[in-house]
Amino acid sequence: MSTGGEQDKRDWKRRDWIGIHAPAGPLGPWPLVVAALAIATAVAVAFVLKSVIGIDDVDMVFLPAIIVIAIRYGFWPSLAACLLGALAYNFFFFPPVYTFALTDPANIANLVFFFVVAFSTSQLASRAREAALAAARRAETTEALYAFSNKIAGIVTLDELLWATGQQIASMLKLDAVILLPDADGKLEVAAASPPDNPMDDADVAVARQAWDQGRSAGRGTEALLTTRHLFLPLRTSHGPIGAIGVGRTGEPLNPDEERLLTALVDQAAVAIERIRLAAAMDAARLAAETERLRSALLTSLSHDLKTPLASITGAATSLRQYGELYDAAARDELAATIQGESERLSRFVANLLDMTRLKAGGIELKREPIDLGEAVGAAVQRMQGVLGEHQVAVDLPADLPMLDLDVVLWEQVLVNLLDNAAKYSPPGSTIAIGASGDGRQVELTVSDEGPGIPAEDLERVFEMFHRVNKGDRQRAGTGLGLSICRGFVEVLGGTIQAANRTDGSGAVFTITFPASVFTAMPREDAAE
Picture (tube, helix red, strand yellow):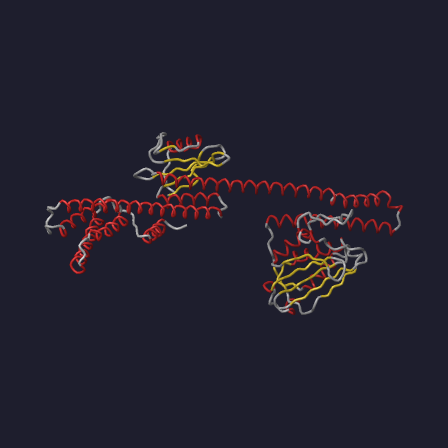
């Protein structure tokens, strides 16, 4: 938004372009001087026309000068030019010349008609000037209101909107402004002021409350004259009053044009305030709905994914304790393996919940160090041996891949979750492939399976919390947190992850990409030490 000085400069240029200026006063010294100079110029031109060209009727020479004065300075200076023109016409061109005496009745009539025509012309020119000035002011006002509307349309915070409104009122109307909004108890409080130290006493607050309650102006210049410093206008929308704006200045009260402009600014501000409040309410409602959805999903996941492994652990432990002597060594080993496997599954579930809590809270502190992708993949595969026991794992990693500067714990958890997801959605005996490629710009690591793949509409949703892909009547066990944690950890580490379906057969493929900014300059042999 431009300052008041810049606005004044634009106004002056626009008025100068159409050849008009604001009047300096009804009969200021400078307009009178210019009027006298214009009539003197007309007299000189008339002498040239009369003596050189031989034109006797030179009265029309004075009209352009009078019209220019009327357009330039308004009615009163043009009236002075009419009087000066009539006197000069009489003095220099009516016999006896160089005197103000008139002996011929025809000359008296000519002089009277000259004055009437000059006066009428100057009045018409003056009115045209006032109309042009009014049109220019309306155009300036419209332009300023449009600019203000565009500005507040992009404001998203209430404090910034209130500050911008106060500044706009101060710059356009040269008024002090104070904006009052109700607090939680319905009491009007000063929310913004321009200038910031704009004083407000109890009487001002009472008048502001009256304007808010009654929905009409109160204070200076109105019947409700309880304060002589401010005029208060209600901030109203279609849903009712939302606050009040007080304006004030030393000197004359607002004229009708200023009142209309102030009303337009107040109406725009009220609509913008309501828009911001509605947006905040919608965000709160959306957040509440999302929180409720996540809570329901978490409770559903807890009821299933905690109960199932706990039931298996409880059943196996009870069998070993009560009927252990009835089982042979192989059966007891199978029950112990069930307890271990379900305990590990439960541990992964709790770890995912904790990891998601850390991601949402932003409490992850990275401990970066050079990592060899081959070693990290090997550690993850070793850790998931129990889950991958019914699958074949094919690892194809080039030996010349660069070292990456990553957090070991987070990166291994990403690999573990991807392997767990691949095993969960792949039939027994299928192959889970881990591959990588790289150049000087980026490194890509892929984890692919031979499962049913991912529906096209779920390729992005698989990374949402608690989202699990349904396949007919089959719902895989899991919390729906693993892939969401993968994306969160990968992005924290500086990479990206995408899901797609394989083009060479059935199955899904997850691609993790790290840019060159994650590469480390540490040589591989140093890292190995």
